[in-house]
Amino acid sequence: MNIPKIIVAVLAAWIALPGLPSALAQNAGSGLPPDLAPAAAQYQSAVDALAAERTKALDQLRQPYLTALAAAGQKATRENKQGEATAVVDETAAVTAGSALSPAPSPLLPRGLSTPRGYFLREAARLDREYAVHAQQAGAEYLRGLTFYENKAQAAGQTDLLKQIQAEKARLAAPGGAGARPAHGAGKSVVLNGDFTQKKADGTPERWTAGEPGKGAVATEQGVTFLRMVSADKKETWFIQYIDRPPDARELQVSVRLRSPDFKGQGPYGIVIAQRDAANQLVVRDQPCVLKAPCPVWKTMNGTVLIHPETKQIIVRCNKVDCSATVDFADLRIEAR
Image 1 (cartoon, helix red, strand yellow):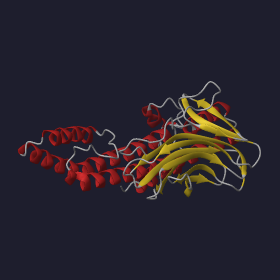
Image 2 (tube, helix red, strand yellow):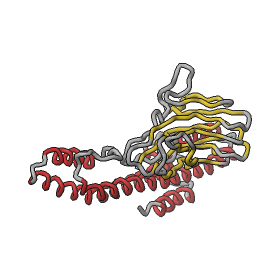
Image 3 (cartoon, one colour):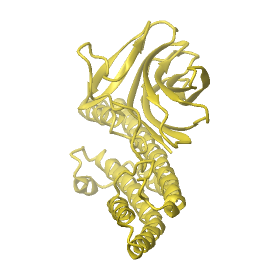
Image 4 (tube, one colour):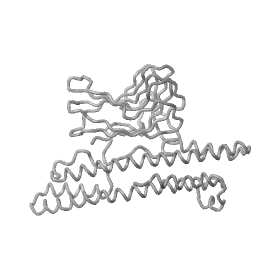
């Protein structure tokens, strides 16, 4: 995916040319004033280019696996293996439609498909991660451009324009705004209520257990929910979820969006994953998605955790330690591979 060149070329153009014709602004159809609409249109163009490249790459990636599925289906039909033939038909339909595939294949799927299937799952996850990173870069460039216009509006005393710019920046900084959501690969997320849309009567998220001394609750901005953790001291604070080891999984693909505008301290905040064995002894503790600095806008984080052979249980923590901060977590996904 040769995306970064597209982003740089398209977005640099409108940053360098703040006086684009108002006619282009009107055609953008964004509802923004003439000074901002060209920038919004160029940003959308960059995002559309990203999506088109991703779609094209995924279409090409599907073809080898679909070819292998077709051959396996024909073989199963010739040998009158109805169960295998049905499993191949179901898998073909899911791949063609772009539906999420389970990390573990159907037990009826021919074993000869394990290699092309594994390759498809790994490469699809890689493409999604690349898309998330590049879309995040596009969103960051757009936010920098808006800041440029914001400074001009402040210097010129354009109060109404300044309010519109600030509203646009707030929209982009919210979950689902600037940047991509975490990579949604070809598998199902094993973490429950990772989007934090379900909450208990006390406001904390369902399926999660809180750790003291900090506080946390589900919050909503612009129709999108997230977990907000608040702690005035530097003691470790967390929300935790226990997951049985997914069968046959060798690694976990982790993705989340993080935000902390008032971070003070040294310690990290983000996602921590621990593994325990059959005797409930700690095997390893990883930090696949953490930050150690203030982050005033949402940042997409992606990471990989290798599962050890002796691991029986996965422990997922939305965590902060050695820092006083308000930390927001959104769109947490963990896919087993």
